Image (cartoon, rainbow, N blue to C red):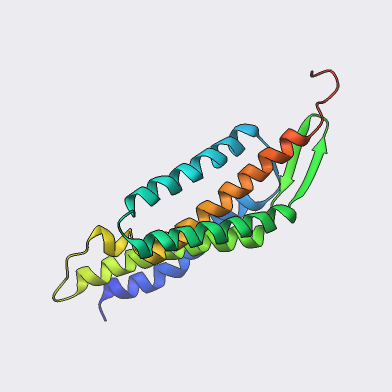
Length: 174
């Protein structure tokens, strides 16, 4: 076994821990800001649309993207029902359910890591095969994990927008 392979095996758990520690604050108590919800509600469906256009000719990748979006939306709905919401004066706060969001983000990060390992192993091979866009980025696993992530955050952002719009206006701010 080569030294670079051993270094990679040592660095992968460190990288996973670092990703987890960077994601943890995203699922803590935070202020509900409308612009953040609008970015999520508009951005993630736009990214799904762009991905669907890119995979238009690959039926398996497109169906995996669609299944991922549906599953992510369902998980977003469940996580939204478990979200703790608070109002303090004119400010709104929410604490998302960390389990689903963290698992979905880590699944997507694991897929990106597996692509990196696949590229590394291909480069280290005696007879590297040419990797195409379809083999890596448009792979059904990539599309399913991205669809899961995008569907989850799109539904969650839309749900937070709906909640904020249902709140009564504060007195004196009308």
